[in-house]
Length: 143
Image (cartoon, rainbow, N blue to C red; front, side, top):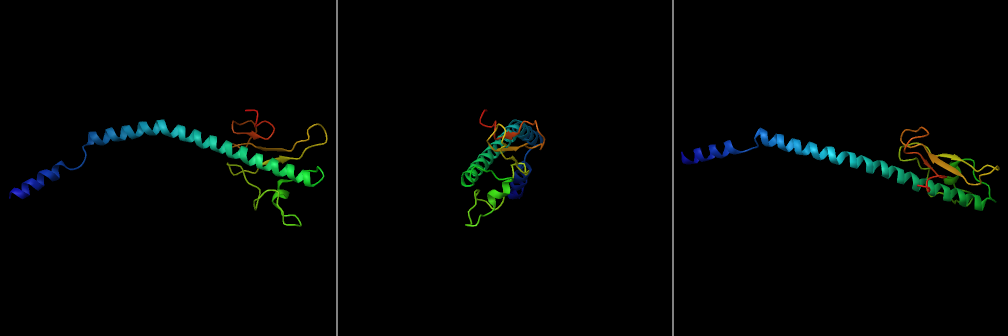
């Protein structure tokens, strides 16, 4: 009989009280409100840095194309991933990369009037000009 009473008391003491559970939930909530905004900012910053890296690679490939083609830049970025007659690709990829927000990079070859540099850009997450995530090959090194 003594064993039965001892087991019953131990079973009654197992688990957490409602107050203990509420304290844990409040602590988890406070931590989440502090951590989640910082993590989201890091994801946004990582996307911007990836876009800058992609644009730099595209500009380098465009410049190499121009060097090998008497100073003429291609009309589209697709030329960079299309093998030439020797199987050479200016950009070592099967297809032109998309920006971190799954949109195509925009490209404009240099014009004869004024600017002789190729122009590559991404409108960022919103896909519209003027957003905070816009990345432009002409201005990205200014910041």
